[in-house]
Length: 196
Image 1 (cartoon, rainbow, N blue to C red):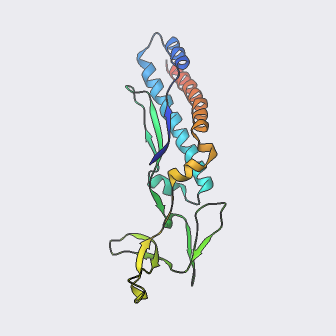
Image 2: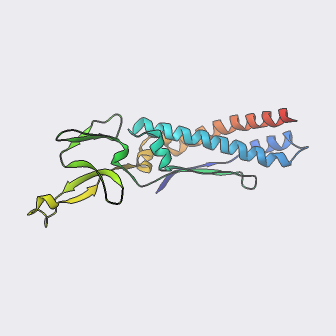
Image 3: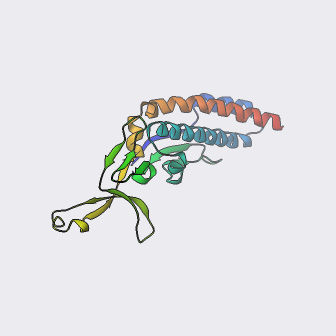
């Protein structure tokens, strides 16, 4: 699952203005385009991450290390770029989990309440994997409650949360891209003109 998808490309007016400005040095056009698109993509990744963290009780480094906001960068030969929000469900260990004497609690959404459960615990598996697990008895295991099945607990997936945030809708992101792309293009043009 990889939504929302945002494409960062130039419109025809921006391309014509760029070609008029650098008529004498057409080899700079592709470099300026790719730089402006990649700058816009970085700005957009930061914005999406901030919006997700405003809703989810997860740290920025956990979103970054799990590579949930994926970029396909532009280059001289392909001046278009893409941003995707991807990923499966986030393990509960990345959220604000607290283990008390008898109860474990966690908070997935910043605005929501803390959830509590008794049969939830932290554990490190023999493989070295650390997580938050839940002990649940199946029908076969009700006679031996100490041998209940252990399953890892998960929060929501990032695409699921992103689809529910109005500021991350396709139209809102496209508007943000249009404004940032023009500003980054102007900055790249000024930089190239001062180099000469």
